Amino acid sequence: MQPPVSPTRIPYSIAPMMDWSDRYYRYFMRGITRRTLLYTEMISTAAIVHGDRSRLLDFDPVEHPLSLQIGGSDVVEIAQAVAAAESWDYDEINLNVGCPSDRVQERGLGACLMATPDLVARMVEAMKGQTAKPVTVKHRIGIDHMDRYEDMHNFVRIVRSAGPARFTVHARIAWLEGLSPKENRTVPPLRYEDVYRLKEDFPELDIEINGGIRSLDAADRHLRSVDRVMIGRAAYETPWVMSTADSRIAGVPPPSDCGRVAVERMIPYLEECYARGVPSRKILRHMLGMFSGLPGARLWRQGLSGKLPDNGAPLLRSVIERMPRETMETPPQ
Ligand SMILES: Cc1cc2nc3c(=O)[nH]c(=O)nc-3n(C[C@H](O)[C@H](O)[C@H](O)COP(=O)(O)O)c2cc1C
Image 1 (tube, rainbow, N blue to C red):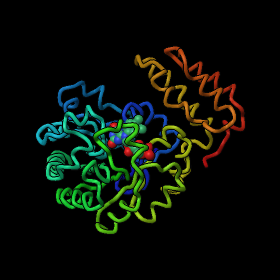
Image 2 (cartoon, protein in one colour):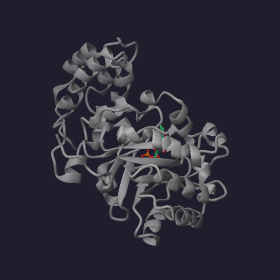
Image 3 (cartoon, rainbow, N blue to C red):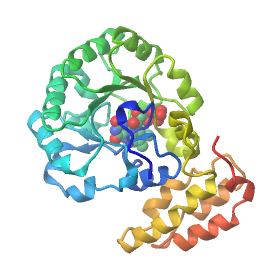
Image 4 (cartoon, rainbow, N blue to C red):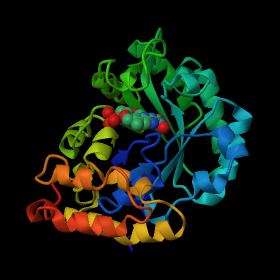
């Protein structure tokens, strides 16, 4: 068992991704990297306060270090949500100030909060009042009419007064009028220089950069200018890109010395989840990109999609057996 790692010392994280970074994806990624900071999907404060907490918040201990991302806009409710989540033992609590979806916007959450930094500061204060864990903020470089570097600078200047432990910056504007959430992750241009400049202007702050980073080599280049790097889609679509994270972070070997070990580890997990009433499709869907770009990638993807049995363990075993050996034995790279 590896010692717990404080989230404040980890240079890489895997982004919160709604419908993607659920507990099954996170468990799978722990076969590839133990040291990277993981995030939950965004969970609204209302859901935590009024909903089925166990379903929303339970996770496997192997998922540590793990940040709980919450979305809210009400100072009282956010304090209640953080207090309610305390007994789940997350390693940090993150506030979403970056989601551009219409539904989220209608409730005053996510990226539109960039226009109200005083409210964000009060929320961070309220969160810190309920937990001793680090409270962090994930935001954009701007929104619609507030798209200049100076606007982000002003946002960070005000929010930092509440003392968040980190600012994670998705290096794109969110256009709240006219673009879908998906387009808002591709259409507005990336402005990494704005994030570097933020670090220069606030050297004492812990700044993480995010957006369009597809490999750990690329991440390491950003680390010359900022403190940390968050990777989202690349870690989901091609999970093996994270396979050298542990050796880069801590000089320790990865949990799996080849792809085969990482996927075979999921066989008993599928059995265990099936016994708890979780159908295997909820888990296997996160593994489809595992061998992208390698011989057998199609066989893998097709073998694990379509109509799947509720207990997918035997199916996974048989697909592994049919995969080309050189692909299954690809070392971390
Ligand atoms: C399917 C999907 C769901 C997302 N859901 C969230 C979310 O719940 N909270 C959040 O802060 N960002 C969310 N994001 C944005 C990512 O966290 C990240 O900021 C964005 O994808 C840019 O990073 P990347 O280019 O490395 O993917 C989501 C992204 C994707 C692709």
